[in-house]
Length: 275
Image (cartoon, helix red, strand yellow):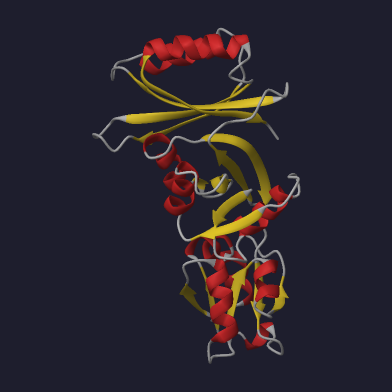
């Protein structure tokens, strides 16, 4: 079995993938990919069996590249979900203390999430951008400047032989929801979630209400509703919805049937065990 993830090694995506692998039996090859497009397309073409990707962060919100591809570019289903706490670590070469750090590198999102720590503990440090936290750790380990520290995962510190100078420096609680994508979703467990994406047939008052009413009148617990631009025209949106229940549950199946009648577009993103 082959499972892909957004690389490189030492990222939060790799850590989430290794947590998922603990649930699987048999030999599994973990394969890093350079972009979301690469890893999702690999599953879609059958080159790998599954992909695990972040889809939502408690601070940054929805990962739009992933949801957009699920709507338009691939025919994949959510098979599992994992909610993973995200912690950031300040790391430098051995022998370098917090006092000796003059430069800090990481990706923009991580630097923003650690801004309070950086302002209080390293107010004079210059900030530098990297494509990923793992790339930042690699640069801190290999560049000629020993005052360069990186912010990333504990795994990346170990991978590149760096010392952790400060632990869990996040600005606040940070969790990321990862999903496992495959050709088929998960069989019923009795404690499931179903994800869909739809668009309304007309831009008119009450169009969205009419669709959501099909969920409400059946007493289905709608856990998330979010809109994203369809990129077809200004004011045209896709709506992403998560609800408790499996697509094979009669009440869910009935609701989806009625939603399909009222929507101009409906795509099932999968049913899977909820965490």
